[in-house]
Length: 297
Image (cartoon, rainbow, N blue to C red; front, side, top):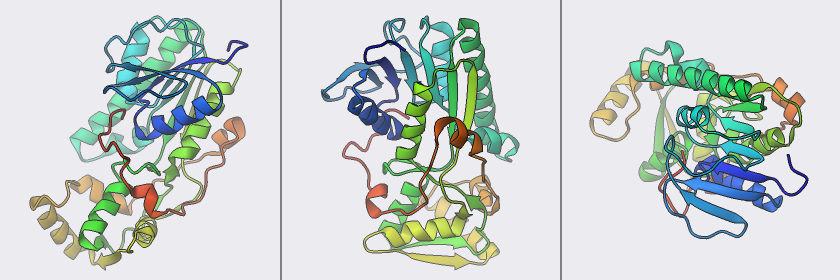
């Protein structure tokens, strides 16, 4: 990194993680070139560029660091073919690479394969350039109101006043706040060691799926009810709701409610001083941002 404030190229800067990362970079005095697929209003300390991965986004050889909060597969393609000098790289992936490779849903298996290939592509390109690269894999992200999991549950519960789950929706989850992810990204950016490192980033609390949803519903204003149904009855209700367009969750998504998805964050705690908060949500964490279009992710 240079002695003066680092010059950082940030992809996915208008997405749920990117917005939080951008705010922290600006507070630290970084010189940030931020990329979004859509034009953004002027921001102090930020040079906005409009573009979409994996297309060309302008010169990238004069940065101290490159940080990607957007789709890993698209970023890895761009990075592999773009001259970037000696810039340190930090990129977000997903723990889906661990989870969905054996899914009964072909689309989910294909997603896991793309993530796996993207991780390898990023590692190979960084090694070929002799630069440091860090991969961060979050679990269930929340806190910005634009995630596709807990915020969608909150939106359905607000609309109907209740949310339905099977009684055995007891698979373990570790929801992680965007602020904790942003802190991990900046910690990775500040490291001075070389090589390729990867970290799973779960939240600070492990709890059953239905308890996680119950806390979301209790945080809403007014709170919504959680209705627990026997498994067979829930399957019938979920199928009917999908046909009516109430939700689009497939069978694999619903079955995962019963599956433990818990990850070890000991390496991140050791190397990045990672200290994620427990899951104590508020209604504001599930409110859509002023610009509800998900530009960056």
